[in-house]
Image 1 (tube, rainbow, N blue to C red):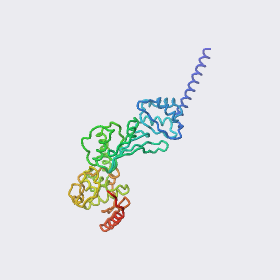
Image 2: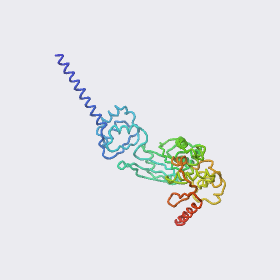
Image 3: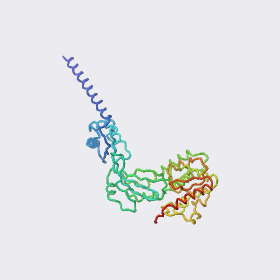
Image 4: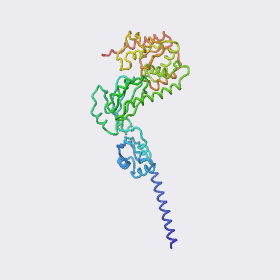
Length: 386
């Protein structure tokens, strides 16, 4: 009899283990399977939340079919304690495994509301925008000029939300003074900036920031990023460049950055300046003259005078030989790469062509014809009131 009981017990245990294994396999399949979402949603993880509350939110939004399976799967993957606050875009069909990974990986929020401080050459603007999960595109809710316009009420509301994302977007060609002044005016940041970083030392890019971040620390991040870009460009440079140091390459790249906003012609512009340096010609570029006047503190806001083109400053390349002593702006990666590997051309002249780009020439005669065409285009343009 005892043998019979033991046999039945063993059978029961085996059956239970079999059923348990089946349940585990089924749960694992559910955890890894395509989810029920048919449209993307934005999932908010409040600061201090936990997987229990988050899983209920996901079930309510139709992102997962079972809160318990999601919690068990997160626990099994040892990610229960890795939940990161923020707002995350959950794509259609995302599995529970993919959702857990997104909520625990960390990094920037991928949806919700964000404030972007855009540091441009001519203005610093503040943009409040929100990602529409249905289209995966940002919808602008407000935009205003920093310092010159009263901030709309929505800006104050968004700033107070714990899951709002903040970014500082620095455009190519801005000066270090412009970046520093913009950071000083950003009311979500803290800390003093003892001095303006060296010209050209800041990498134009988009930087994630958080309320209370130290301004000097953000500038240090930009400097570190630019050091990497300059080192990479210098490492990959052409061997016969007429520059002897990474600093000179940075100076050349800053001039290229200010001379053209057309990506496709950066290497052609670079070739003009390289050819001039190789031939002992003066660079004769207006942006360097402007920098000698403004020192990078704002924009000139008018055309150059003949007296200024002839005036002696360390940056006036109509007067000095070779490169100016410092960069004249902060160049981006593309201009650094153009300076390091310019096109192989015979061009030594260029002038605006009326389309936003430039007409290039190898002889003064050809250049003069291009200049005459540009003068005709200028003459046909309507006069704007100042």
